[in-house]
Amino acid sequence: MNLVVIIPAYNEEKNIGQVIRSVKKYTNNIIVIDDGSQDKTFKIALENGTKVYRHLINRGLGGALGTGIKAALSDGADIIVTIDADGQHNPDEIPKLIKPIIVKEADIVIGSRFIKNQKMPIFRKVGNHFFNIITFFLFGIKSTDSQSGMRAFDRRAAENLEIFTSGMEVASEIVKEVRLCKLKLKEIPIEAIYTPYSLSKGQGFIVGLKTLIKLFILKLTK
Image (cartoon, rainbow, N blue to C red):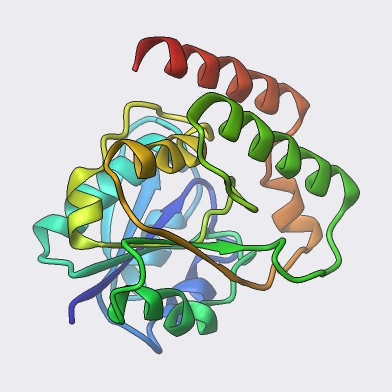
């Protein structure tokens, strides 16, 4: 089984090295997408022995994931995992994330922060529930954590995904693709590691509003 982990990163010199080292306990096939960073993200990722694809400008999360998935498929990935670079996710949960794919229970697995009760800033909790509702309203797929950045895909699912968006709205777009491609989706509980740094990396009000508008445009055009 060729497991490839994609880490989209934008100005993540603070945590990218530690995230890579933690992921290496489970695979050496790691692809970092440096999405136009202006710090040492690219240099640190190379020093930690990963493949690094570099966008000359910041394209956004959707653009980074699109590049990463194409690269992973070119590398012969059987299973692809995406994980954030800010330290919010625990790489030790990768084995349980990919297990439903290995045992043929799912084509896509989303790591959900809401299946089990855990401490979470109220604005994050409200924001995520809001986008869960919007995702269901627009695309007809229920998810307890549509905005999670920790996911796993089998090869067939990854090959069938069509990512048109470039920003944070890609999370809901991936959920939309589950229905369009008739894929089996499973959610498993994961831990959310919140620090002042990781909280600073999330969607603020303005970004959230832009994401909402882009999702309505996506619904009308695709």
